[in-house]
Amino acid sequence: MLLRIVRLTLVPAQVPMFLQLFRQSEARIRQQPGCQHLELWQDADQPHIYCTYSHWADATALNAYRHSALFGEVWPATKRLLAAPAEAFSVVKAN
Image (cartoon, rainbow, N blue to C red):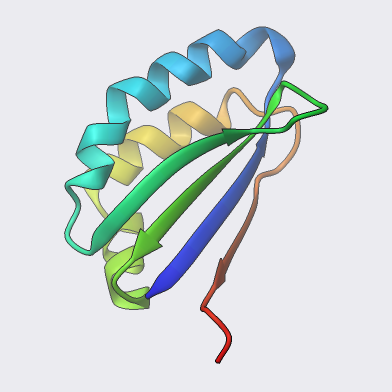
């Protein structure tokens, strides 16, 4: 399993728009082949910073989503709301 964390620093005034976009998209993201889990986290000290936390079957499943029509719709809309470039990384559980 691949864990994906994406840190999003939003323009504070754009937080409501981001939350609306996420709520409209989350069920469809969860239905993507290989997506096993999706959560939205908010920074405890900086409320305009959010992270998406997702579980994917493997890198192939994540990459398939990243090349999907859904991603092509959601990511550009999200990107317009950012105050800084997103930080994304994938990790696996250490043995």
